[in-house]
Length: 289
Image 1 (cartoon, rainbow, N blue to C red):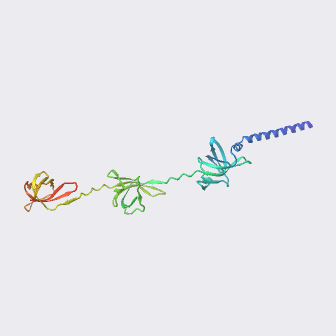
Image 2 (cartoon, rainbow, N blue to C red):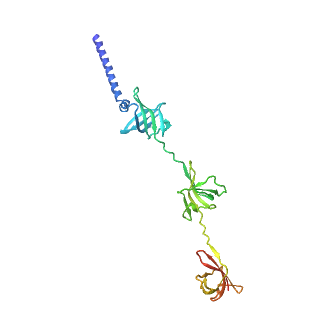
């Protein structure tokens, strides 16, 4: 009976030893133990965030090695040398961190997390429809308008090198914009900026008035009469080098009475007044003979 009891004790002791060996083997093969073998305590590492949980995150490091790190109340976050929060951490970020290993539960804790510089938030912008208004004031890089309902705009509209000016279907420039012009324009407005005119349609250009003058009464004799014009010889005997145009507005007088161009003859002595415009013709406005 004693031998049987001793045998049972040996068997039980064997199972206990076997169980301890299995536990040791399983503990050695666990992911946490594998991490402990690869990452030294207080290491500074970097990698790409692949997942975020309520109390930690996963990081993909060089060589496609992925590890999980705990976040506690003592974990410090910073971004661009400024304090940050756990909520600022996003999947896909490439981050750096300081790691502390807990040998009790074979887990890593992130003691310091360095987030990448935040990307600037693009401004929220919109482009208006084509608007109509009258230019009130033109400044160096902006202009103000009065709307068609008579109200003056509360904001100026900026112009820059990207603003397109159009006049008579052709490219124009800011120099062609004048106070008092009725214009149509498109504006781009951003939440954090001003109002910039992207297109400005100017009114049709007014023709440049001709520079003209009217002569005093001149004396000459008709040298040659042509269709719609005549030439003269001046009283000093010189022949004129230009022809004087006649039109429906030219007034003819013969011996104090109204006459016509048909009554004018070569050789007649005349007194006449001429209107001349820069770059244009010489038009007889009054002819007396």
